[in-house]
Image (tube, rainbow, N blue to C red; front, side, top):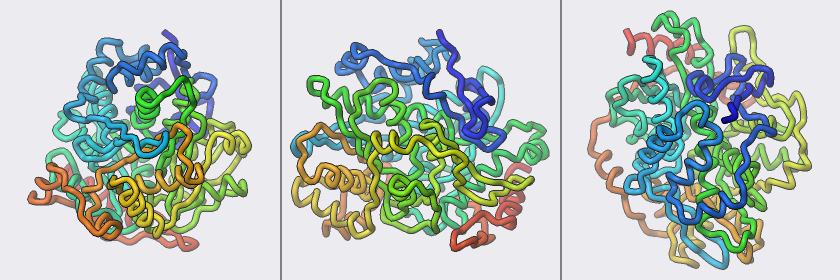
Length: 483
């Protein structure tokens, strides 16, 4: 079958296989690996219609095999996906709410977050390639909340992999933190002074530091990433909308997908699904008070501001990495200016504008205020008796605003976390606590292990940026861990 290649968003001539992109994590020029729009595989109406009777694992095979079939034998890929998406471990639920609007609950997996879906695929495919090649990898993860726990759970105990997670010290919930810090073993959780953008830049810089990898392990390729910058995280996120449509479709009517967006991997996966042939009428991209993207759609100007703290913790991102893929998909180029040492001089520079009019035709984006998070949670509970959490509230508010309260069009809002991960926020919104998931109850009693970075970030134009002191301390800490 056709070999699918992926290019760097900073150099379309640099093309790699999925395996290479997965193992590298980030291109050597700091670009993200992306598929050419013309190369996105297409599914027929018959194939999409046939998904109605299939399980999530079987739908994921239909969606992912065209990308991966030349690198992973079909029977092996089926085996990996059946294991990753065992419905006894990670059930997916679609709930009718009002009119023709639904909620897709992507929050019933091991860490009660939608990140479980991509993390479980990532972990199994990475482990498959490492076993075949007899290699080891250290996986760097920057998290604003849920990614860290999901990746930690998915990779915990694997013989060929270690996981190093950087998270903003004061910007995640206790429940999110404990999902990373209580596993121990091959999982190393490191709190960082700063926001998600600082953690993300630390992860990216380490990925590109081939000399440090060689110094530590005599292996320049030892480091990779499990963030949404990874191909292994991007591709499986194109499965959600196919599954949603298979459960709600009515006579071929296009549906609206409302996606709460932080680092934009979830939204980018939905873009790919639409390009594959899924009848998505509009993609709604709700963000919190970090409103750089809706402002870009309105003005054509991308201006990164200091990250604001919002109740949707995992979406507290002011410079979404996957915007680089989105720009690339629509014919543009967004990149970060760096010095000779790989330090970011200026983030989010537009070298070439994307097709903004086409982007606006496909995507609607709006910012949901902190106050509106709680108002939406209360309204959904009062009107429908459904408890949604902070991130799902952004998706629902965006959908309700787009439809002007009239839910007569086929629509699915993504609910990306279990309300039990944010009990205090739920209590603030609806005056009662949600049920606490069994796994979270267990982790609340376990001992934590962390390795804290004490250095402070630089402050540049009001924004927190990775400092040389932080990077130096991180390398010293890793040297101690692996000495």
